[in-house]
Image 1 (tube, one colour):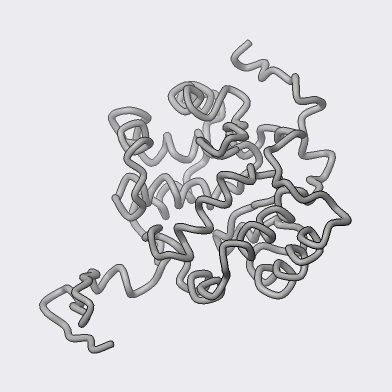
Image 2 (cartoon, rainbow, N blue to C red; image 1 turned 180 degrees about the vertical axis):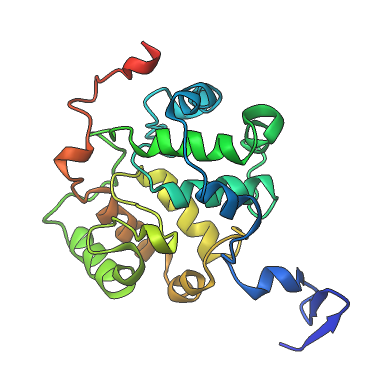
Length: 238
């Protein structure tokens, strides 16, 4: 593919345009993301800010097993801050969430620090949405192999992620949500995706994708990170 520079944009032979800044790095930090990461959070304010988020992600932070909204509970602080900052900066396309993530809806960088600190400590849903292939099936085994061969370096042995590198925790996440995000990343539809991941999974077939996400969705979450039952009610909103 022929590439030429034009001002601050890069024009490809395919007619696609990317800003030079966007190709410089997927996570350069700086700006609001860096500011929020270094602020001391106020958990009481975090509860108040989260009231806006709870309309979609539920008061428990569990999202929905149908994949409409992801589980946020237990996610790493840095991952949450990065995604919120990217949505606010229009580096990640999320038209549903965008108006609710804006400063006029939830506040400034301090509000980001507050709400993500609150979300990170919420216990996770012990019954997240799972794929169709149970342990013992060929598809489950192949999904595990695909994960071990392709995903461990960034997401860890069990999907626990790497906080200091902004790699998300995917264990306990809903199958249908992960499947949609995986497909968007593979197909170039998620603009703030790590380019290393795009390259790693570009050859995955739809069946490969379904099998590896099925395995992740069925990976046990440490008991201490889970709510006592699927009937748990967040006492902060009771």
